[in-house]
Structures are given as C-alpha cells and as structure tokens.
Image (cartoon, rainbow, N blue to C red; front, side):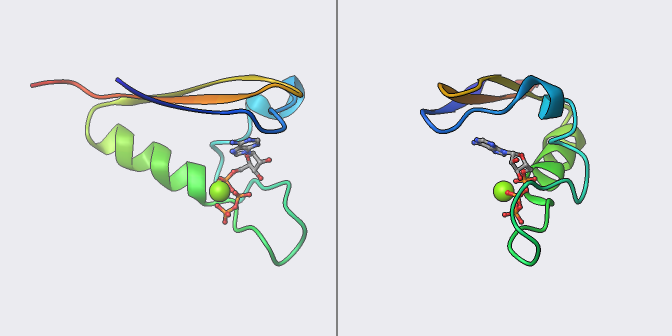
Length: 70
Ligand SMILES: Nc1ncnc2c1ncn2[C@@H]1O[C@H](COP(=O)(O)OP(=O)(O)OP(=O)(O)O)[C@@H](O)[C@H]1O
Ligand SMILES: [Mg+2]
C-alpha cells in the first residue's frame, strides 16, 4: 500500500463519493478536466488494485493505492 497525504482544503463529505467519476471537477470551467483521479483509479484497477480516499474538510486528504504483490 502506498499512501499520499496532504494538509489542503479537504473534500466535503457530500462530494467524496463523486471524485473518482470521469469529468467530475470542482475547478473553474476550463481549468480542470476532472480526469486525474478517474484515470488513476482505472489504472490501479487494471492492475488488480484498489484506490481509497479519506478526507476531512479543512484538514486534508489521504489517498491510498493498494496493489497485490503477486
Ligand atoms: N487532494 C485533494 N484535496 C482536495 N480536493 C481534491 C483533492 N484531490 C481531488 N480533489 C477533488 O476531486 C475533484 C476531482 O479530482 P481530479 O483530479 O479527478 O480532477 P481535477 O483535479 O479537478 O482536474 P485535473 O485532474 O484535470 O486537474 C477535484 O476537482 C477536487 O474537487
Ligand atoms: Mg487532479
């Protein structure tokens, strides 16, 4: 498992379930594709793994990639 944590804005609970969807973005129009996490999720899945997120608004977010060893 590889985890990456930040101390950024955090992700509100009501959008946490949408962030891995293709084209979902909260960035202003023309600035985000909403494909970053969706592509990452698909790549990890294609390797038989899992990608998870934990986040608290105002505190930060932690993304975890869990890959099988064999
Ligand atoms: N580390 C983070 N902290 C807070 N919000 C995040 C974080 N990572 C992702 N998000 C939220 O998830 C949404 C989707 O992320 P994703 O990387 O798929 O697209 P994006 O960053 O908006 O666009 P792009 O990948 O093209 O830059 C973001 O718009 C943001 O709302
Ligand atoms: Mg992104």
